[in-house]
Amino acid sequence: MNRKEFLTGLSALAGLAVTTPLAAQAEDRSAPRHTRAITMWDFSWLERRWDGAGYEDWDVALDELAERGYDAVRIDAYPHLVAHGPERVWTLLPQWNTQDWGSPSINRVQVMPALLDFMRACARRGIKVGLSTWYREDQDRTRMKITGPQVMGDYWIRTLERIEAAGLLEQVLYVDLCNEWPLDVWAPFYRGNGTGAWTEPRSLAYMQAALSRVRARYPALPLLFSFTNERVEDYLEHDVGEFDLLEHHLWMSQAKGDAFYKAVGYHYERFDDRGYRNVALNAERVYRARPAYWNGLLTERIDRLAAVSAKLGKPLATTECWALVDYKDGPLLKWDWIKDLCAQGARHAAGTGRWVAIATSNFCGPQFRGMWRDVDYHRELTRMIKAAPIAADLRRGRLWERL
Image (tube, rainbow, N blue to C red; front, side):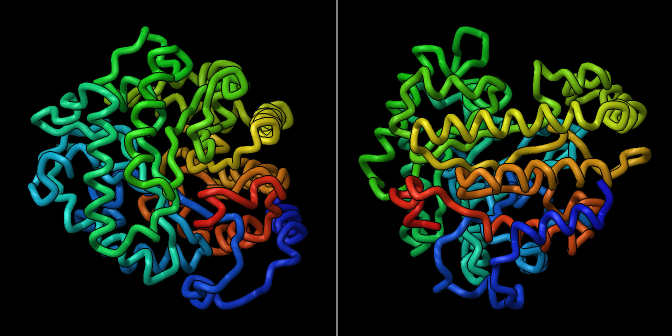
């Protein structure tokens, strides 16, 4: 797909949107409810604050986000650290050194008042905040103090109470009690059956208990756990009645048991550069050899998830998505094919009417310079997303009220 075709396709979807200056859009609180153009700033918003890391000046980063047309951001609220010392300076261990999310080496952070300051900066720009957590590991292993769902719920309640006391509760779009539950990399305190499946009975009971605890204190907040399982039909076979939305993470590279990454030779290496070496040498070649096939895997998964949403009557949000799970700036790592594939995914999801929050990729942040610098690309996509239809059955409920 060339750039002319890409922009033409986006313009067709966005044709009904009213064109106004981006600054005015960001500040317009009276705008009708619409699909949110969301991005994921994970734990990078707080951990990547050294010179040149992209988030050292939140006003600059958020101005650039609004300039690109985004009006929602999903971040880590660090509820376990807030519960055990909101103003304490915590020493965090690196999650990896191969990725550009977060810090590649040991770091120190102070969650409060930073979280409140960041949310205030978002509020000034009309940017809603989706709260999540990756339960980052600190040198005291504080996350291992989560001994059950009641503790998890209480940690979130304490965090939300701080947000409420600051007058920022209305700024919250939704609360994701754990990113990609129950993967061991994010929730090592939970010991399941080793499959990493959220569908096992103990996991279902855990989520129900945690959600109920937070719901009792904050009945108006949209609540959920986010997932990344390949088989989206699992939602139809298990009770997700307590979920106000499905925040499902979906990539082409994940389809058919990570078929693309297996062809490339990438295995999610966290402290070993061999995986990215194979991505640099092989990924674009593998994709361009069969673009229709790989594109079809992506759109087929989107259609399946949309069908699940329609059967359940639940809205969808996706903040990690479309092309590859992992990518970054680097030699031989070109962005053009990644951007095209991500645009196809965002456009296809928008056309279903089942999404109320859509990301353009999980690389939409200032640290991914090759993706970030193409302002027109982001503007075209976010204009299309915000003009996307929302199905009639989704125009109600806790999340709808916050759009």
